[in-house]
Image 1 (cartoon, rainbow, N blue to C red):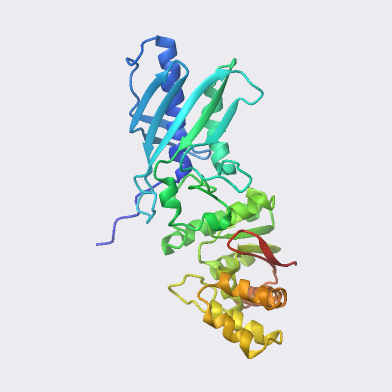
Image 2 (cartoon, rainbow, N blue to C red):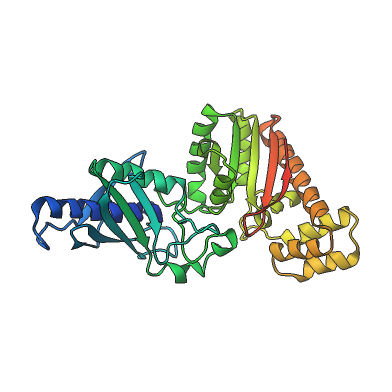
Length: 362
């Protein structure tokens, strides 16, 4: 008997928007009925995910005063392994006299902020808020939504968010409402489907490696319409892009993940292979570094530490330039071998802070 198919789940932005929508509807009902604490409570809310609709359970909702309501949802990523499972998401919604902005999104406790102090609410989440809340806002009102994640600050310590410039909590990040385990084999077909649709509209694609890569892509003003998620399946998706007549692919990823391609490793899961320090060490030799530099790389524990050590030794630019060139060359050869087509492959490597450390143009 085959195992059951994965149960569907949703990303964190979905539950934040659902809580905000429930609070706003509940507040409007309260004002229309003028019945303090007697308004019918919402047990679920219908949500527009931009490409489909769904129903999200509401754990609690209450009016705090005539202008304020609070609603709570619980994160449910489905069958995916996700540290946010059952995390409460609070939305504090206020109705104010109309201002220049109709919908104002704020970061409460546990929702991260960028290094500039802005709420870590990225483009998909903002579009989701707009689609679901703007039609409900009275013409003479502005709505402020403060998202609070009571467990967010603690959970963020178990992620690499801070290294990518997301401080003090979790981010509302992603390009889809559906929760996708980016390393799971049964999602390769889903990634292929996304690629096939996007390559119909644009022959020049950007492969975004890792969820945090999306925040880097956004900062680089890369349009979402050309971004293809890859998980660890870079080889298969590069070939797929070639077969579907893509002219170019830009690989955008954290250097510790992406440099595996320089060693001929086209599935970047650490369960398959993890030779990043050895790959960096080989590049040190190729650019003329001495045995002490090689030893320094092999003695650290992470690719980021290796990069910092090479900066100290004055070798970082040459080493990572070598690696980017090698990634590009090997990726193009891989596509030629398995798809029998020529396709340009560019590379952007960034560090744990999301800072670009090397580019290889087409």
